[in-house]
Image (cartoon, rainbow, N blue to C red; front, side, top):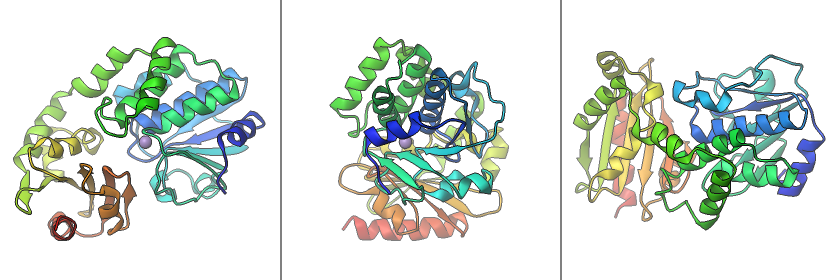
Amino acid sequence: MRIELKECARLLLSKDNILILTHERPDGDTLGSGFALCRALNSLGKKSRVICSDEIPKKYSYLSFGLDNSEFPVDYVVAVDVATKELLGSVPEEYKNRVDLCIDHHSTNSHYADKLLLIESAACCENIYMLLCEMGVEISSQIADCLYTGITTDTGCFRYDSANSQTYHIAAHLIDSGARNGWINRVMFETKTKTYARLERLALDSMRFYCSDRVAVITITQDMYEATGSSEQETEAIAPLTRQIEGVEIGITIRENKNGTCKASIRTFEKVNAAELAKMFGGGGHPQAAACRFDTDVESAREMLVEKCGVLLV
Ligand SMILES: [Mn+2]
């Protein structure tokens, strides 16, 4: 059942011992949302902790710095920035099957939670910000760092269309509350590990063009991780590379899984709806950034995707 901001705030204020779930392959928005909410609940004297199905990349460690991560008997389960139950990954089934509240910004949310706060903003962290204000939580500098991280990462450092005036207003308030905007942007967008730099070079080498160069496809295989010492954890910044090429309207990054199947990240500009393309393969996401999975190998996935691109681009 969908609920409004006020009811969501009232609900959270009435709960304690709250477990927060983030999505698999965690990004800045799901982690920023989770740790900001956790810190806010702690500041109200409530027990809360964040869990994630996958390991949290090191660059995000400041988000959880100083938090007490010890376990407690869970009374209430909240998912943040998680559009479908499947995206929770391999968190314990007991929690996966009883999400009491989901706070999200994906229009493709599958309504898997008992209660859903869905506001279509640029980042889930924007919704968490509004929620915390509604709850009367004071935005500490640590909470501000968390929320700023989600907003800047989901908007590609404020470059996407999704960043509207509300996004900038909230970011301004976060900076006033002590968010380290310059440092966070540098860590999120400029700093590359050596292993990532090597992977990026191979990824660019793998780029192929289709549909009169209106579609660019990058392929990342397990061999490439091995050759570079990199891992899937480091592929977050690869997908946007496809959109940097002049004339490209659909950018696709296909990553091979260990078992030979694969998944695709899709990036588009205004003319093409990425979520629509992902949906054709059972996936979802945003109008300009979406993803889907395949039970097939990389080549077959590429063929199927390029074929659908041909249909969308006519
Ligand atoms: Mn998000």
